[in-house]
Amino acid sequence: MKVVLFGPPGAGKGTQAKSICNRYSIPHISTGDIFRKNISENTPLGIEAKKYIDNGQLVPDEVTINMVKDRLQAEDCKLGYLLDGFPRTVHQANALEEFLYDRKESLDTALLIQVPSEFILERMTGRRVCPSCGASYHVKFNPTKIESKCDVCGSDIIQRKDDSEETVKERLAVYERQTQPLIEYYKDKDLLSVVDGTKAINEVFESICKILGSE
Ligand code: ADP
Ligand code: ADP
Ligand code: ZN
Image: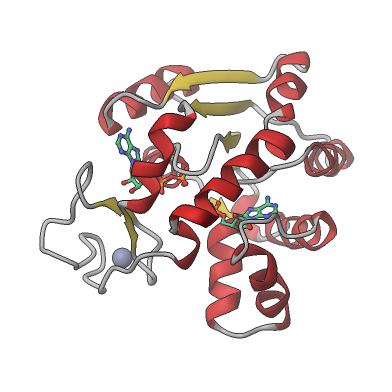
């Protein structure tokens, strides 16, 4: 199964991706997580990406596309994967389509988690993440069991630098301008599925499982 997960910042992509990948035993490929890992390791890719991420801008398409193509050629992607946060532009979507076409493969679904912008700020400013395993929490909507410790791996959770109010507003504007066109793009290709991301986390997951089926 090959699935694309998209939606505004704070829609719940990361949260749902973890559950989907457990349920369907496919790798979780989050471009945001890959960039953050490179930033923490100070690699050339990380140094380049940081300039954009800290300002709420997208990392340039060519950098992002090459990174994803590399990742998709790894052995664990043979039977499928979930792309979380890629594609984010029509150019990226075309590159993915070409990559799949060359391999005689295709996407099963492009899943949009729809959340109106008035929900986003509270979600993002209350978000806490685990720097080790990428798990996402919320101070009010999804707190950790033990204060400040990741439920999955026990690391100290942190607030992302780009989750400040100012950067979130910029990211939302970037989403509307550069990523929202993907809704029409995938609708035209008959690949679009939409879930209501304003529901509780477990309800959103149930809706997603209904769409993905029992594969
Ligand atoms: P994204 O990867 O789309 O940016 P996350 O999965 O990190 O989003 O979720 C953003 C924030 O909102 C996190 O703090 C998360 O705990 C919280 N969250 C996710 N889904 C829901 C939901 N259905 N209801 C309320 N809060 C949610
Ligand atoms: P969120 O979970 O809030 O949607 P991500 O963790 O997916 O955010 O991404 C964090 C940042 O990494 C983005 O704001 C952007 O700067 C960069 N990024 C992630 N994915 C992409 C992509 N496909 N293209 C360009 N930049 C990306
Ligand atoms: Zn963790």
